[in-house]
Amino acid sequence: MSDHRIMTLPLTAGRAAPLQGTRALARTPGTSPEGVSFRELLQRQQLKFSHHAEQRLEQRGIVLNSDQLERIAGAVDQAAAKGARDSLVLFRDIAMIVNVPNRTVVTAMDGSSMKEHVFTQIDSAVVVS
Image (cartoon, rainbow, N blue to C red; front, side):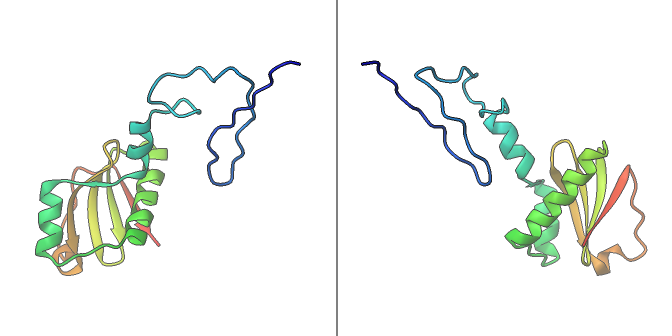
């Protein structure tokens, strides 16, 4: 009688993992089955705020909930797909300058702070609907 062990990989939403025999998949430690490092996965999904941006948000009374942050992160994904480096992201009455490769909000301002303001050193703009 042969020993047939079945090992399954963790399932992710909407995807089925293949069944494997007794051999484990060879991959680099710290990478997902798709070959992407855990750090890269976090950075893709995460939006960071510089100290300056955090101060501006606080000073201007701007509070963003998780749904809004996800929508803004999606806009950063769109900018990254087009090769943007420094983007103006407009969300409702909030303007943010985002360093796209680092996924970092550099500064933020509300509608009243944007009046008669010239945005410089950006290469793209994304309007979040």
